[in-house]
Length: 207
Image (cartoon, rainbow, N blue to C red; front, side, top):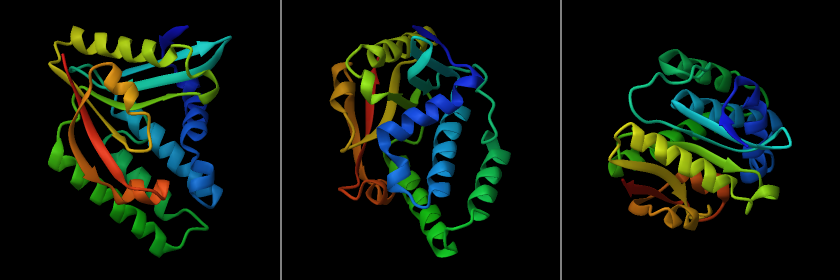
């Protein structure tokens, strides 16, 4: 069943992201993984005015957060200027992670944003975060979520949609909808996370 996101879905969305991208094994200690999950999902929600989930037997199995038009964004502790300060405070005060490592993460996050901005600076009409639980992939939840978001953008008179992905993700899924690569960039953040290429992309769909 497709429905609008509710605040009570937040923990389920975090769990799906961890299943899909395995934060708990890629970032150590666990407290760092937990904080990165919270920031990743919460920050994406705070940048969105479209948030929807698909559920099966009352359990959330997929979700999509995106933006389009001038509707108000969802409110979260990571919203806006004060949200950025909240992130920095939580991150810098996190125990068990050396200060040098924290500054390393902040540096590669900044470099990632700079590299992406050179290709596409706008975050309007963007898929901010999209994930479907691995054990339900193939049931059509992802297609339903993406189609609903595309319709949402069309109803807001958007001319195009963008999203960011990487070489290790299933980018063929986006190509099925007509997305094409606008530009490619190297991400030290993606390299640190995946341990692989760091090759990242901005995809674009012309409506």
